[in-house]
Image 1 (cartoon, rainbow, N blue to C red):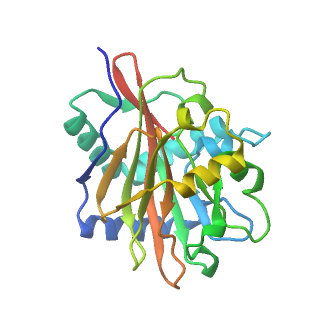
Image 2: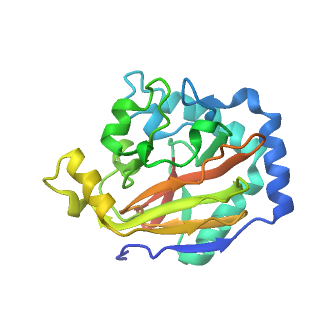
Length: 251
Protein backbone atom coordinates (compact mmCIF):
# COMPACT_ATOMS: atom_id res chain seq x y z
CA UNK A 1 0.00 0.00 0.00
CA UNK A 2 1.36 3.42 -0.92
CA UNK A 3 1.02 6.07 1.77
CA UNK A 4 1.49 9.70 0.80
CA UNK A 5 2.14 12.64 3.10
CA UNK A 6 -0.57 12.74 5.77
CA UNK A 7 -2.84 15.76 5.67
CA UNK A 8 -2.94 17.49 9.04
CA UNK A 9 -6.03 17.25 11.22
CA UNK A 10 -7.16 18.43 14.65
CA UNK A 11 -9.69 16.18 16.43
CA UNK A 12 -11.22 16.25 19.94
CA UNK A 13 -10.06 13.21 21.92
CA UNK A 14 -10.34 13.91 25.67
CA UNK A 15 -12.89 15.91 27.65
CA UNK A 16 -11.87 18.84 29.89
CA UNK A 17 -12.68 16.72 32.96
CA UNK A 18 -10.42 13.93 31.69
CA UNK A 19 -7.61 16.41 31.07
CA UNK A 20 -7.97 17.89 34.57
CA UNK A 21 -7.70 14.39 36.02
CA UNK A 22 -4.61 13.61 33.93
CA UNK A 23 -2.94 16.84 35.05
CA UNK A 24 -3.54 15.98 38.70
CA UNK A 25 -2.10 12.49 38.21
CA UNK A 26 0.94 13.94 36.43
CA UNK A 27 1.51 16.25 39.38
CA UNK A 28 1.21 13.26 41.70
CA UNK A 29 4.15 11.59 39.93
CA UNK A 30 6.28 14.74 39.68
CA UNK A 31 9.18 12.89 41.30
CA UNK A 32 9.50 10.87 38.08
CA UNK A 33 9.66 13.85 35.70
CA UNK A 34 12.95 14.08 33.81
CA UNK A 35 14.42 17.61 33.96
CA UNK A 36 15.46 18.78 30.49
CA UNK A 37 17.09 22.15 31.23
CA UNK A 38 19.44 23.22 33.99
CA UNK A 39 17.77 26.63 34.49
CA UNK A 40 14.15 26.33 33.43
CA UNK A 41 11.18 24.16 34.49
CA UNK A 42 10.95 22.00 31.39
CA UNK A 43 10.50 18.24 31.85
CA UNK A 44 9.49 15.08 30.07
CA UNK A 45 7.76 12.06 31.48
CA UNK A 46 9.29 9.40 29.29
CA UNK A 47 12.34 8.98 27.09
CA UNK A 48 12.65 11.00 23.92
CA UNK A 49 15.03 10.66 20.99
CA UNK A 50 16.15 14.29 20.83
CA UNK A 51 17.30 14.42 24.46
CA UNK A 52 18.36 10.82 24.94
CA UNK A 53 20.03 10.05 21.60
CA UNK A 54 20.82 13.15 19.56
CA UNK A 55 23.78 15.14 20.94
CA UNK A 56 23.85 12.95 24.07
CA UNK A 57 27.00 10.81 24.19
CA UNK A 58 25.56 8.64 26.98
CA UNK A 59 22.61 7.66 24.74
CA UNK A 60 20.30 6.51 27.59
CA UNK A 61 17.28 6.24 25.27
CA UNK A 62 16.78 2.45 25.33
CA UNK A 63 17.39 2.20 29.08
CA UNK A 64 14.94 5.01 29.85
CA UNK A 65 12.39 3.54 27.46
CA UNK A 66 12.55 0.21 29.29
CA UNK A 67 12.09 2.02 32.61
CA UNK A 68 9.36 4.46 31.64
CA UNK A 69 7.21 2.56 29.13
CA UNK A 70 5.63 0.21 31.72
CA UNK A 71 5.17 3.13 34.13
CA UNK A 72 3.40 5.22 31.48
CA UNK A 73 1.10 2.39 30.43
CA UNK A 74 0.23 1.55 34.02
CA UNK A 75 -0.57 5.12 35.04
CA UNK A 76 -2.02 6.60 31.83
CA UNK A 77 -3.50 3.65 29.96
CA UNK A 78 -6.64 5.55 28.98
CA UNK A 79 -4.57 8.27 27.32
CA UNK A 80 -2.83 5.75 25.08
CA UNK A 81 -6.11 3.98 24.33
CA UNK A 82 -7.68 7.30 23.31
CA UNK A 83 -4.67 8.17 21.16
CA UNK A 84 -4.73 4.85 19.30
CA UNK A 85 -8.48 4.96 18.83
CA UNK A 86 -8.37 8.50 17.43
CA UNK A 87 -5.50 7.80 15.04
CA UNK A 88 -7.00 4.54 13.80
CA UNK A 89 -10.35 6.20 13.26
CA UNK A 90 -9.00 9.13 11.30
CA UNK A 91 -6.22 7.44 9.35
CA UNK A 92 -8.31 4.29 8.74
CA UNK A 93 -5.13 2.25 9.00
CA UNK A 94 -3.50 0.02 11.59
CA UNK A 95 -1.69 1.94 14.33
CA UNK A 96 0.54 0.49 17.06
CA UNK A 97 3.67 1.20 19.08
CA UNK A 98 7.10 0.54 17.63
CA UNK A 99 8.70 -2.33 19.60
CA UNK A 100 11.65 -1.34 21.75
CA UNK A 101 11.20 2.39 21.25
CA UNK A 102 10.03 4.97 23.78
CA UNK A 103 6.29 5.42 23.98
CA UNK A 104 4.85 8.84 23.19
CA UNK A 105 5.43 10.81 26.38
CA UNK A 106 4.56 14.03 28.13
CA UNK A 107 6.13 17.44 27.58
CA UNK A 108 5.70 19.47 30.77
CA UNK A 109 6.47 23.19 30.91
CA UNK A 110 5.90 24.95 34.22
CA UNK A 111 5.82 28.72 34.25
CA UNK A 112 8.94 30.89 34.06
CA UNK A 113 9.30 34.56 33.04
CA UNK A 114 11.96 33.60 30.49
CA UNK A 115 9.38 31.57 28.55
CA UNK A 116 7.59 34.71 27.36
CA UNK A 117 7.62 34.66 23.56
CA UNK A 118 10.58 36.43 21.97
CA UNK A 119 12.19 36.32 18.54
CA UNK A 120 15.52 36.14 20.39
CA UNK A 121 14.66 32.53 21.28
CA UNK A 122 14.28 31.46 17.65
CA UNK A 123 16.99 29.21 16.26
CA UNK A 124 17.36 26.26 13.93
CA UNK A 125 17.41 22.70 15.21
CA UNK A 126 21.13 22.27 14.57
CA UNK A 127 21.91 25.43 16.52
CA UNK A 128 19.53 24.36 19.28
CA UNK A 129 21.39 21.08 19.77
CA UNK A 130 24.56 23.12 20.29
CA UNK A 131 23.00 25.61 22.69
CA UNK A 132 20.13 23.77 24.40
CA UNK A 133 21.98 23.45 27.72
CA UNK A 134 23.32 27.01 27.70
CA UNK A 135 22.87 28.93 30.94
CA UNK A 136 19.86 31.22 30.87
CA UNK A 137 18.82 30.50 27.27
CA UNK A 138 15.35 29.00 26.65
CA UNK A 139 15.92 28.39 22.95
CA UNK A 140 12.83 27.55 20.90
CA UNK A 141 13.88 25.58 17.81
CA UNK A 142 12.25 25.87 14.40
CA UNK A 143 12.59 22.45 12.83
CA UNK A 144 11.31 19.57 10.76
CA UNK A 145 10.88 16.20 12.45
CA UNK A 146 13.53 13.56 11.83
CA UNK A 147 12.88 11.42 14.91
CA UNK A 148 12.53 8.25 12.83
CA UNK A 149 16.10 8.70 11.58
CA UNK A 150 17.38 9.31 15.12
CA UNK A 151 16.16 5.90 16.29
CA UNK A 152 17.49 4.14 13.21
CA UNK A 153 14.35 3.77 11.12
CA UNK A 154 14.51 4.13 7.33
CA UNK A 155 13.17 7.15 5.51
CA UNK A 156 9.41 6.61 5.31
CA UNK A 157 6.15 8.53 5.43
CA UNK A 158 5.84 9.99 8.91
CA UNK A 159 3.38 11.63 11.26
CA UNK A 160 3.90 13.80 14.30
CA UNK A 161 1.23 14.53 16.88
CA UNK A 162 0.42 16.60 19.93
CA UNK A 163 -2.39 15.83 22.37
CA UNK A 164 -3.05 18.96 24.43
CA UNK A 165 -3.59 18.18 28.13
CA UNK A 166 -3.15 21.58 29.81
CA UNK A 167 -2.76 24.98 28.16
CA UNK A 168 -1.61 28.29 29.70
CA UNK A 169 -4.19 31.03 30.04
CA UNK A 170 -3.02 32.80 26.87
CA UNK A 171 -3.33 29.63 24.82
CA UNK A 172 -0.71 27.58 22.99
CA UNK A 173 -0.16 25.92 19.66
CA UNK A 174 2.22 25.47 16.79
CA UNK A 175 3.65 27.90 14.26
CA UNK A 176 4.08 26.33 10.81
CA UNK A 177 5.94 27.52 7.71
CA UNK A 178 5.26 26.36 4.12
CA UNK A 179 8.89 25.21 3.86
CA UNK A 180 10.41 21.73 3.98
CA UNK A 181 14.00 20.53 4.29
CA UNK A 182 14.21 20.56 0.50
CA UNK A 183 13.85 24.35 0.54
CA UNK A 184 16.87 24.59 2.85
CA UNK A 185 19.38 22.58 0.85
CA UNK A 186 22.77 24.26 0.53
CA UNK A 187 21.76 27.04 2.94
CA UNK A 188 23.78 27.58 6.12
CA UNK A 189 22.15 27.87 9.53
CA UNK A 190 22.07 31.66 9.52
CA UNK A 191 20.58 31.69 6.05
CA UNK A 192 17.90 29.20 7.08
CA UNK A 193 16.77 31.44 9.91
CA UNK A 194 16.71 34.48 7.63
CA UNK A 195 14.58 32.62 5.08
CA UNK A 196 12.16 31.51 7.80
CA UNK A 197 11.82 35.07 9.08
CA UNK A 198 11.06 36.32 5.56
CA UNK A 199 8.44 33.62 4.93
CA UNK A 200 4.83 34.00 6.05
CA UNK A 201 3.77 31.41 8.63
CA UNK A 202 0.50 30.38 10.24
CA UNK A 203 -0.41 29.34 13.77
CA UNK A 204 -2.48 26.35 14.82
CA UNK A 205 -4.18 26.95 18.16
CA UNK A 206 -4.37 23.84 20.32
CA UNK A 207 -7.59 22.95 22.08
CA UNK A 208 -7.43 21.22 25.45
CA UNK A 209 -8.18 17.56 24.82
CA UNK A 210 -7.55 17.97 21.09
CA UNK A 211 -5.17 15.88 19.00
CA UNK A 212 -3.23 17.73 16.30
CA UNK A 213 -1.57 15.51 13.68
CA UNK A 214 0.72 16.59 10.85
CA UNK A 215 3.39 15.08 8.63
CA UNK A 216 6.32 16.68 10.46
CA UNK A 217 7.82 17.62 7.08
CA UNK A 218 7.18 21.36 7.29
CA UNK A 219 9.20 23.66 9.53
CA UNK A 220 7.35 24.29 12.78
CA UNK A 221 7.83 25.64 16.29
CA UNK A 222 6.05 25.29 19.64
CA UNK A 223 4.23 28.43 20.73
CA UNK A 224 2.63 29.51 23.98
CA UNK A 225 5.04 28.54 26.74
CA UNK A 226 3.75 29.54 30.20
CA UNK A 227 5.32 32.56 31.84
CA UNK A 228 2.70 33.43 34.49
CA UNK A 229 2.84 31.64 37.83
CA UNK A 230 0.76 28.52 38.49
CA UNK A 231 0.30 27.73 34.81
CA UNK A 232 1.40 24.72 32.77
CA UNK A 233 1.74 23.70 29.16
CA UNK A 234 1.37 19.91 29.12
CA UNK A 235 1.11 17.80 25.99
CA UNK A 236 1.47 14.19 24.98
CA UNK A 237 4.00 14.11 22.13
CA UNK A 238 5.02 11.50 19.64
CA UNK A 239 5.85 10.49 16.10
CA UNK A 240 4.95 7.67 13.78
CA UNK A 241 6.50 5.99 10.75
CA UNK A 242 4.83 3.84 8.11
CA UNK A 243 6.50 0.44 8.47
CA UNK A 244 5.38 -3.05 7.47
CA UNK A 245 1.90 -1.91 6.48
CA UNK A 246 1.04 0.07 9.59
CA UNK A 247 1.78 3.26 11.50
CA UNK A 248 4.23 2.58 14.33
CA UNK A 249 4.43 5.19 17.07
CA UNK A 250 7.36 6.25 19.23
CA UNK A 251 9.02 9.28 20.80
